[in-house]
Image 1 (cartoon, rainbow, N blue to C red):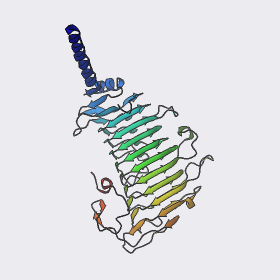
Image 2 (image 1 turned 135 degrees about the vertical axis):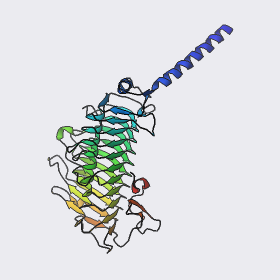
Image 3 (image 1 turned 90 degrees about the horizontal axis):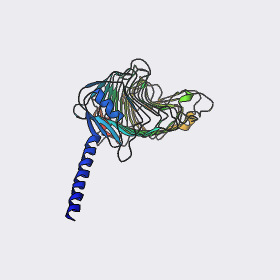
Image 4 (image 1 turned 90 degrees about the vertical axis):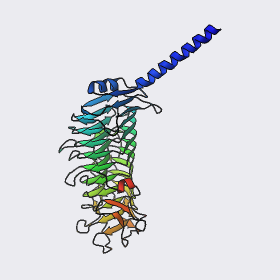
Length: 396
């Protein structure tokens, strides 16, 4: 009996020892590209890959990473105060056919085409899913072409959170989504140039159920958000989608500059609510149809509601640019507050219907010249515009 008890205790100790060893193996620290590639190739559900501080070459890739809801695969910085920097490469990282992965707290710089590229491996019926990108810094990507900071193609159930992007390709987007569904872009910051032809965030190629929340767009290019776009027919997901984008929401964001902060382009339903739009360069909204294939619905069903828009009448003749092959009668401004910088209570000119617009209130900001667009407690327009302090305050 005593012998059996002793064997049981020894077996228990060995089992616990093996369990601890397995747990340690799931949390690996890498110091160079060779170790990183080995860790990616061997990554399984629950594994955490911590990358030591330093500079690493871009061009890293992995396919088929499969975490689980309870045990995602995490790729992160060892030291959050000194994140690793990945430089160069076509893409700093390229992930294909993945699920339940988290990529966080990395710096991606100087890639030739995209900072990070995640796709479905060309299997449009099997999207990558449950992907989280968090706390990434993506900068100086591409050149004058269609090069994106974050490129997502064929994703479902995903989140891009607390990321900071600057200087992507002049013809690209900070975040470009093609055939993506049920995703959130949350509390991100974008820095660009009004001289660029690109966009801040774009959702096209049959994308649906996308929410852009609490983000700050600082002179990000010709269009702050491009809700829809123009996609080649083979790249739609689903392949037969009759719209570029559907059911898109933009809420609690801040837009500074840009010729057109908001563009509806071949979209079938979108809401733009509670945003602060400061000194748009030419228009507040554009309504366009760039993909004129007969299967597509005309751009329709957009609501612009309870936003605070500060505009310079010398720069903006009309709030809205309406292109051909669209349905402008299905769009409307609803209960927005407009403030003209000449302080004359000037009512802007619209090309679409307006309901309950306010023009006789002067907003009071914490530090408008310094870029802090939080409103004081006694601001007459406090119930309009963004409610997200992270978007309203400048971050450098």
